[in-house]
Image (spheres, rainbow, N blue to C red):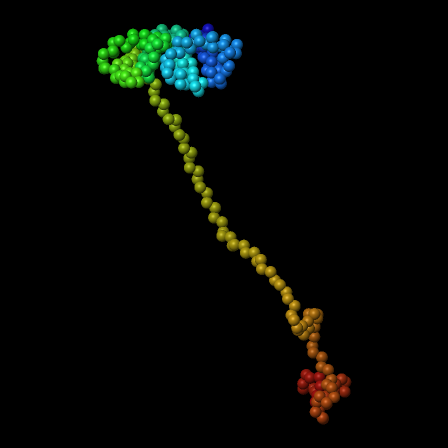
Length: 292
């Protein structure tokens, strides 16, 4: 079994154990939120079972808890859920430290996990003091006892600011202790890396961007095209009101030579009656067809 698979199995075991506790607490929170009947056998069983996970957090803020119960919120159960979640993350980090590839990595991981636990308890102490948590709570006494190991050397550096009316304490020494522990955590990690000769990660160079060569442009000269004009005019034919000569006649009618009709009686003066037909005298000097 390699180290990676062993770490995965250890993490699964740690999250499985703490996951059971988290599930029990979450179900309790939901039962209170929906107003479940406390006389029910299931509710009685579940509350009795979950008391061993949330009992230590019960009296952190007694006055605030009494007010929140009117809206069905169990504040100490929420604190318990957050605490178990954080402890699960820190525990899996500590347990998986023993499965590192080299001894130096094992030492580095164990030291880093120890610093993370100290930072967590110091931050919890500072917040509990700042929010006037009750010393009657088992959880508050537990946090104060664990954090006192690191807090005592910083105890008298700066005086604590107290607000007696609200019970709030701004513990400046705890804040300084948190900053110092974080600095030591970073410095220790850097020293171990330098001893192990871990090279610094080079900056990633941006990948070269290849530009496409400019394609030669081809110009094609075409003769200008005349704009196409579409005649959309309409031609309307209208019939004249008065027919002209030859209206509705053959178009060749106008090309016929005129026919001379004999004049009627009394149209010419006496002695000048023209002669038509074969009896008419011919004039050889003229092209006419009759003589007067």
